[in-house]
Image (tube, rainbow, N blue to C red; front, top):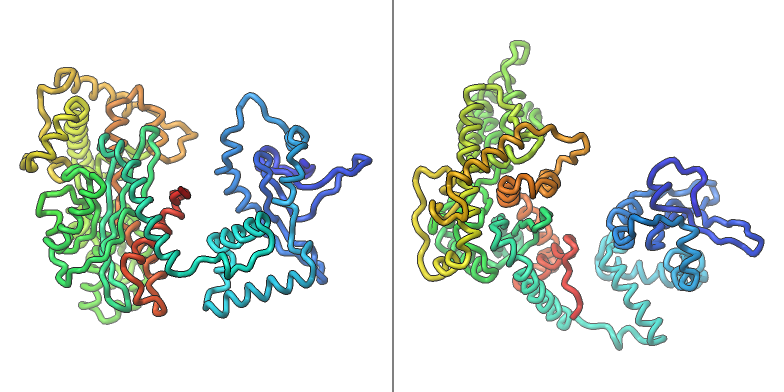
Length: 550
């Protein structure tokens, strides 16, 4: 039923009220419910009024999120837009089967059943030492719904007769983990061939047994310029000595297991000496984590000022939300009206920016910035001479990457054979992408001459530079390049390969938070293989990549 008071476009286009029409044509609205017009899935908007005439409002956030991802909505043809009433009338034969999905509520349970359900949920919380929030966890709700479905199919059964125990589910976790790994190998095949894969890598030690785990997360883009990511491994690191060579042996096995290209997969890590040493063994394309660089810059400056001035501790919380080099520069300009300590701190930060942060900004970062349409002019750089230098370097880098794309596209088969049968060649010292690329550009292998390639790329750069950004631009560079993959083909391919590289290794840090929730005091002795399976599968569930039942 349409909402007569609707003003928001969500109510007008995508959702409606829920109700029934009686025999005389009178509409009766179910209070507190709203339904998706496309798939008839409903959500509670508010509770009924209690004895105090108050009610709890739930809002439309969940329903709004559902509408965005509703498969029925995406499949709906643009040629017809039936109203909710029309849609229901056309499906009159199936309305009765759909009604329980949204119309059933706890008040329709008998008082006895309500008490039983509350008692069982409370036992789940207390006996298992679970949080109250666990009762609203999707995994628990899916488990309960599966049990209801089994009961509806088989009738009354004793749960102890059909419920699987810890050993079976442990084995199922490993089976699902292996199945997921095999699926991701297939998903990554095409992005690897197109050089549109990057990764983050980090290490974590649990708080109880002090076991060490190696996180390896991949990011990739597909032909539709959609950016995706997933956790490949949260691998137990058995070596006591976390040396570069030991770390590299573990990373190498991950590369080989998922057919990742050595030297052609940019990897973002922190500045740990053992991590740097590991990737230097074969001169892999390692980039610094800019989030760690920001933290190091501020921490170093604060510590130095703290050492010089004992009263500095009161200012430790003064600096917040400093995002990038140029914004930080603007924030730390010396002001004669500032307290002396603040001015000293600003001077120290400026010094540390040049010492700690600026050297970590590589040419690939400048190119990535240029390929974001909203930042292509480098408006944040005030030094005109420095700006001109960087623009020339960016253009030079774009030409190198464009040549690489042509080279790889025409010689993919031979390149693969060479890669498997011969060691990596040394990189050109004067190549600004020596840490990003693993092969020299061959001048004579392109289907078009080098001169024609350069002219075409220069033409595309000129068009891109002169473009006015549409007001509807959603600040997602992948959307822009998907729309211009035909008229700016070279730049679009470069953008797909460069923008896939994450700016930081924060994704790995997030996975360690998940691992920390699994390896608790009560589960400190859990086998590391099961820890890895649970972490990877939880991340797969979050990313909507849960392996299907086979």
